[in-house]
Amino acid sequence: MAIPHAVSGQRIDVRPLGDDLPTARTVALFKSAQLEAIRMVLPAGKPVPVHQVPGEITIQCLEGRIELTFDGRRQELAAGEMMFLAGGVAHGLVGLEDSSALVTIVLGD
Image 1 (tube, rainbow, N blue to C red):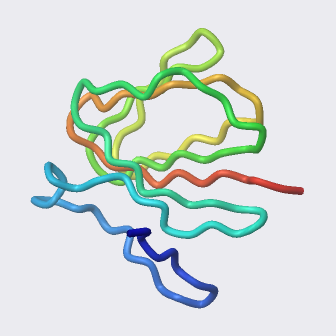
Image 2: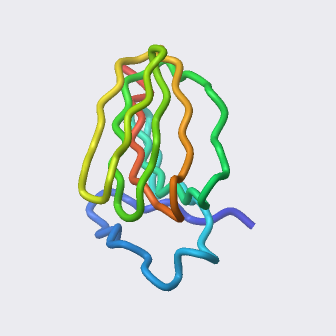
């Protein structure tokens, strides 16, 4: 069964998951023709392999600590910090501790 996406004008709760984080799953919050938003759950030590997407992205750490790998570098994000990556930049991530992030992806022009 598909999880329904939010519709235009609908509020979306992206506050930290707190005690629910260990059992939470990654979920797409909404997807339109031009933009997608995902709450990504990153268990400590479990990597998201290096990949790339054509559109620009932002990654905002909501809770925990995340390490991003891109352009041969590693950069840590703590809760409340955000990073922008240009389209086509190969990147990977790993939770340095149980973490969640708000990821936005530009899909179209």
